[in-house]
Length: 638
Image 1 (cartoon, rainbow, N blue to C red):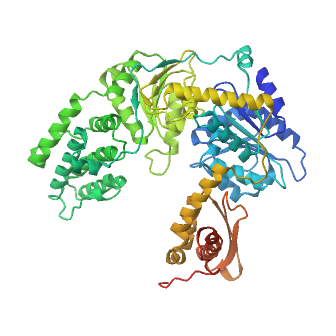
Image 2: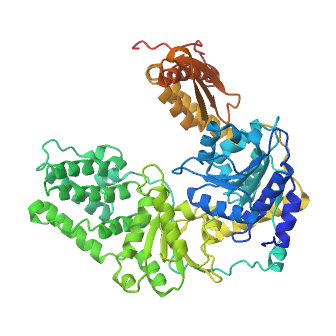
Image 3: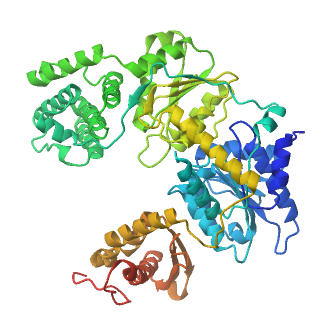
């Protein structure tokens, strides 16, 4: 039978039934501590009035749902259910612990009465530092707080690093805000001696920064097309743009009505070419290849346009063209000018020194064990992975590479594909995993010897999480880029300052005073700003509100990070009764409406119009000098 280490037992005892933040380094057993606290709470509430209670364990990503569910089940021997986007709703609500992502849980809670907060005795927020950001964790914390007057729920926050700030004063403020938002009573963290006495030793990480480059981050003074127009564009930018222009000139041969998409937003460029390629495929025409390549060169131009105008962006752009073979197969049959400009760029790509790619290839060829390469963008993950996959020396050595990104809207990966690739990496069938932030939290692979930081690290939380993925006894961290003013040394100092602040609170048992339903000043300002923007964008457009009220209310909800609860009950004579409620962190009292319609859609439309009208009336007092009349909105074009 597994047993807690002494520092884990001490933390469980110190926490008791209080709201607590538990700060433990990666690999030191945060989940097992939480599991024991959950087991204690469920035991206390086993004979509760109104039936037994359940525990909720919230994780920030789909990838962690399975892992934490298995760990909790093995430790507690209790019934554990799991739910996240892409999964079927649990077939039965008979469980003791539910592991879920935040949005999925909130969705389930709206559907099932047994998941109301009145049925919950404890809620664990894994990677609790997300509560500080514009994140669904904040919605959950606020929802618990609204019910605190009639029902007490223990809140446990788990993390290895609490705040994102660099300066000690800012760290203290952010930590206080976190304590306030979760109504925390204590912070528990083991001492270094406690960890060492129990056999946990911080990993002696080797940090290789010999080939790192300092990157100055900031908004470019001018945009790509302004630089091209004024002659200030780089050589790469000029060459890529010339190929785009030459390809567009040839595109008129295939479609008389071809229109360059460059005046649109950059994310639309490739899609336009893909649609034209599809038309040619339907016509059984080999010319679809032309538009496939046009789409690929649009991607290259987008990488330059959306970047911050530095060598790193150019390196990724050229690597994209190399891995996708964008410039091969273009000859005089597609026009002499296009052939000339593409060959010039192709030669440049072949002779280019891919600095970061060369460094990681060299290190990985010599390494034993597995490696994770962290990147910032989804497309970068694909490019780096395919670059390494196509390397002949790595192929001969049998090194298998893959990549994962968040399975979100606009992503080419499904949740099932993400799960399968992570499992392949865990099992050792994949040696190198290129990943975005989707695996930086909680992914446990004991044989990971190398972690590569391909892109910039912006704060100590990300640094701590990514360093923590190197789980070998003697791991190696390879740093390829460092942000000016936020070097690895700077971030490690910020983490030490954070530890000192936590130590002070822990030793002195001091915490800020707070009132129920109090929002921190930082959160309040951010929420007010979002609400004002949403008010101006959605609630001042009377015609839009009357024509599509349900859609407008959903857009308002998304912008303000609010919640919509709706229910339908069949009414007399084939009608439906709809109940709709909007709440947000600022508007916790809620805006309710009920109405009857000939269909669910009709009933919801009428309710949405009432809620929008009331929202507009109340918010006008904050954001307008003239308050409109309450009631159904008038639209002269209705």
